[in-house]
Image (tube, rainbow, N blue to C red):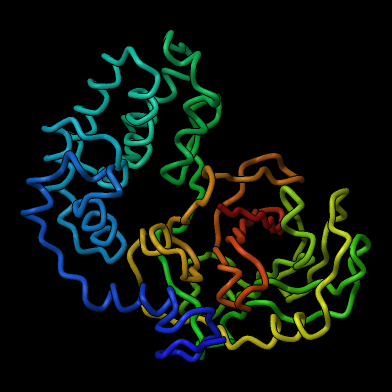
Length: 353
């Protein structure tokens, strides 16, 4: 067994861990936007330097988004929809015109995602029009335009009323952060009926803390699950009170194997807390090793906004937790946490490659 030469984490090879590699890449990254614009056709090809430049530029908030969006429209590059985030009305109009001329489903799907990232009033109207009067190519899609809108962090109902599904502010939870503001994996004593292991408050956030005021919750958000069974529940739900109480909602699915006491202790004794330094809205979207609150998620599968079991509306994306940052080798993948602020319900679901 080896140890990371930067953070001391146990590893199976000599050198530094992937988490530290990612941090080093961030610290040493230099954006060459002019070169990126010259190779814009390559931003969807992971083998090309432009792909990494674009993703890192978005993650770190370094791109001139107006230049990127205008260039992408001119070159008809639609396979990195994030470059159209909050694009100008002129760009929005150009995307709608392109969508009206679509004949192939894959082109339509790309443009729907681009308009979702645009997110303006005209984008909503265009997607609603296709929801009400589908084109022939839409028969090949698996979901309607109101679900494609979720790619950009919003959706709409039959009357065209918009619902925002994410927080534009983004901050991180890091080792040594402020645990009074928020913590990951707080121990509990009650037991899961499936595996017999202990539940855990997988995320606790105090909305009264200054760094978390953007959540618009005047109290404590608690998301509770069984750390063994949550990967088998789609999703796991819990109810919380603003005073800090929480209880899991019964779920028919589960696992047969609970965490060993040592594993549970390692999970709940982590030092992660809130770091107030603001990040780009895409910071978490392009990182596999950051535990983030707000912003866009790094979906390992498709984007997914579970419905609230009480009101039936899509829930708001709150945070993502990378399992292997808590305990190396404990689990793979990411746990995504959503909330319904109106019903005081949290949802947790797991994805992995």
